[in-house]
Amino acid sequence: MRMPTAIKLHKASKTLELQYDAHSYTLSAEFLRVHSPSAEVQGHGKPILQTGKLHVGLNSLEPAGNYALKLCFDDGHDSGLFTWDYLYQLATRHDELWADYLAQLAKAGKGRDPNESIVKLML
Image (cartoon, rainbow, N blue to C red):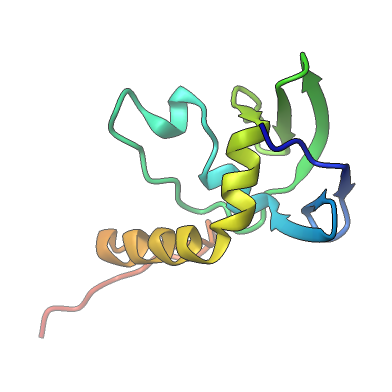
């Protein structure tokens, strides 16, 4: 189990900073929200693509025993328990996971901004 040595919530920048000894990782609330381990996001074996989460923020963090954090997002989502191992995986695989997410959005013709619609014109 890879437990962070320090955790900082930065509400203004909508980020969560995780410190692991000499390494520090900063994860955006949007990244965490679209990768929530909740059933709402992960489905039951078939993940559900999250769209329009560009502006989402984190309201608070709550420890869940000695094994996880409960993240409370400002869009009302608070049902995912981020285990220490899952947070470490998100931190260390951020670039790969983010690229995969952006590719899924593009393939689905969806976007990150809830105030923007993507329209494909057939000419």
